[in-house]
Length: 202
Image (cartoon, rainbow, N blue to C red):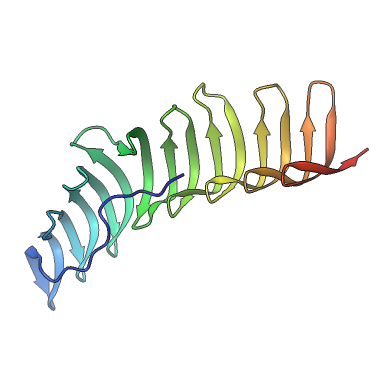
């Protein structure tokens, strides 16, 4: 799952600030206009974006509305042209709602893929991370369990479209460790390594 890509963090030597100062730092409500056309309107604390606010990025034609904490995205949603919360990448449409920081999706959220499949759960630096659920476009749950770097990882349960399921360990998206495959007529227990069963328990 690709991290959010938009306006990059920049070090500016010139900008325009309108609002209140306390001890030489931005405070309370105000706005900052940067040389590249980006603009922040909202609350400040000790010189940083903090509280409710909106960050506009004209170069990528989006805005982020939500909550900031100590200069970083904390939670909220994207908007394109002031419309529904949605974002675009490489011409494909996708939607994300949940926590954000400067590295991308972070914390709890839900990501809808272009084909309608949905991942709901934890994120870190723009990737599925921690506990979550992946549901295909038809609404059928495909996987429940651990994720790391956007892939099945840890303990989880996979539901095949061919009416069998696997419950056990995963690593890098593959069956890995102890687990069991359950079909209508059998239960195959054993140990898997990188998707290949290396031991079968009788």
